[in-house]
Length: 176
Image (tube, rainbow, N blue to C red; front, side):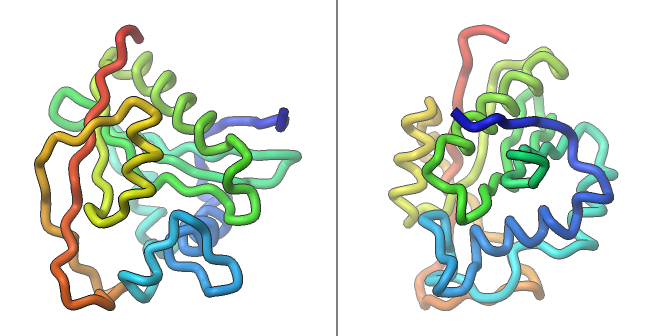
């Protein structure tokens, strides 16, 4: 089993976290991960300025996971409307499928449940990403059959003609 260390993301971690997120979601062909959206979107998912702003947001915690002192993943939790939003979840492409993501998600859920005394979680996933939705289903997240428009940004452009929608997934844990 990997020796993982979980902690809050700091300003010193920004560059590494941005790199991990962008490779996991929009990586080049050589480092494509199963989480990649590069067939749907071009550009960056995140930049340093965006993450620095996120780190200052109230009711938001961004976590990192290290393996042998190297950052290998990140996840964000945010207290919103009496529930906990999960986002910015990415694992280093060279470490995917090793169980790190499962453990990081469990850590984030447990830590944020205790912090905000809530047991309801939600997230959004591109609705056409069936493999990613299945991953979250295995972790207890279920479709709400609610969709929201995919956000627009100057950082990315859509590569397909179809409208991108985000499916809202929800999980209710039995205990904190």
